[in-house]
Length: 144
Image (cartoon, rainbow, N blue to C red; front, side):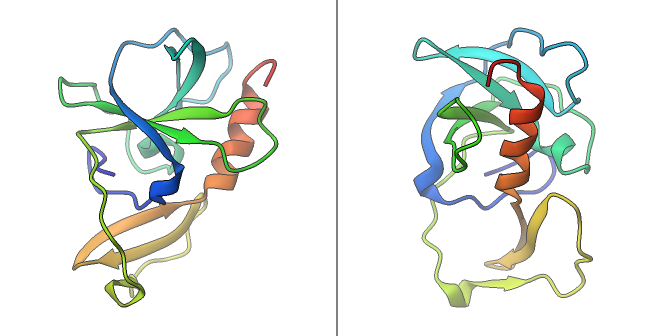
């Protein structure tokens, strides 16, 4: 999944749909900067996450006409919300991954909220700590 700078690797089984970006409603008061707000998706609320900010890497990128929302299925049972959205800088692609095609980045220091920093087909990608993200959503969204 492409970010403004860099890429994420996520299991394809988590992806429910990819939709065009639309301006979200503002987030709740006191929400962290990585929670960009909520949009309506299939008649339900969909919290939007800026992964660049969640991973403490970059400021929130300005959306463009290429920005997409990757709708992800929740993995933990803490959320009373089956889906949330992650902003992608452009259309993500599905790639088959073989164990031999992924290796830990040799110079990557351990970082909070990142499960692994890897090299995939010669390019660096991050595997986010999805459980930490979903627990963070649970902590800041009222009624979830």
